[in-house]
Length: 505
Image (cartoon, rainbow, N blue to C red):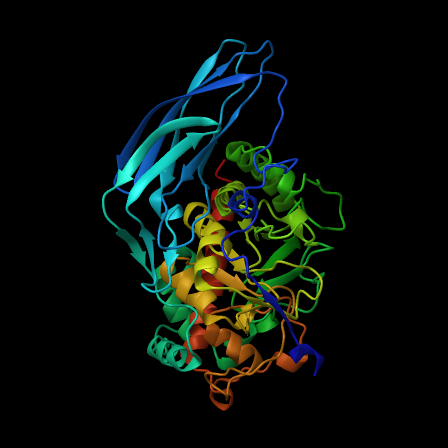
């Protein structure tokens, strides 16, 4: 069957993506290297001091406008790691900052702070991020800053292995299956009762029958749901009359990320790459707060933004939706987008988790990537976005990652996203998904397989051949359906609460 075929996409370059590739090969003939920019004035950067507090390294720099015109300067803090047992890029972006507008002869002090976790390589033998002993040199743009020493090898954080044989994964999943909520609790609860008192969520969910639970795991129809503003991308939540009779509202999605795709007039924004070129996270946050105000007034609850995969290759047809070849810049800019949108009362949905590195055959390609590369390059931006932006939703990608479609990938959606990063929101598919059977639980396929993986909602929901996930015949448990229902309903409760409180900014 055509949907079962896939093409291999081997990531033989490992962690040497983007500028790391050119640096490692000693190429100095790149016309527009990473961080390149021009100004109408000139600046001098003086590195003042470096301090280490726990796992944070802070470098203070002084930026002086030495030219004849006003302007802003971007300061990039680079870390040059020592030679180590693991192959390392010659330099790693550790932090960045932007000055205010400086008049001629005006100066500003900036403090750039680096989390050692973000410059430490992942050692697959120990399943841990490690900091090798040695001297770590720092540079602020082209100026040497104070180095720091690591006396002995340090383990900064151990992780569960996420590229393991199917049998081991089966046992881990079985150990973490959620229990079924006890029946016979309070009867007659409505969704409005849960909004007033979120502690009633479990009791409310225990009232829902299998049909209602199943309906919460799928969006409504195809794109342009009749439940929302024309031109929307679909709806989730209260997508059936029975659910709406219980007071559960639908949440309306609009496609992004460079503005919003609706039939009515709406603002279009510069693409993500152009925004990343500003190196100004505060500016990006304010821009998306303004966009959030606009789309909220248009009846949009969820904006499918930001796009934040790594720009692995300039030929990727989706690069315009993504920020950068660097995970730190990607994660910080994405977090700014999330904070801006959600301050205006619109839920953000970063996408696409993970390794969506090509648009051609995007839903048949199989990204074969080592765990080190996955964690250091392709997941780190998402980690920063989740930890610093706290998005309400995350969207999976179309492609396979190491042989598993991302919308069935337990380790991406559950082990890493929820278990390691503490994500508490809703995980949704990209629009439509591929039929498949679980290798760990052969009785499970399609939507049942997806729910067990921890991917909560199929969007937009119009795939009749993958809809059935009845609990007992299909092997899925009622407790898993209830877990998914709670994720959906928590989002809707947050939305109802933010609507009553108004925008934060």
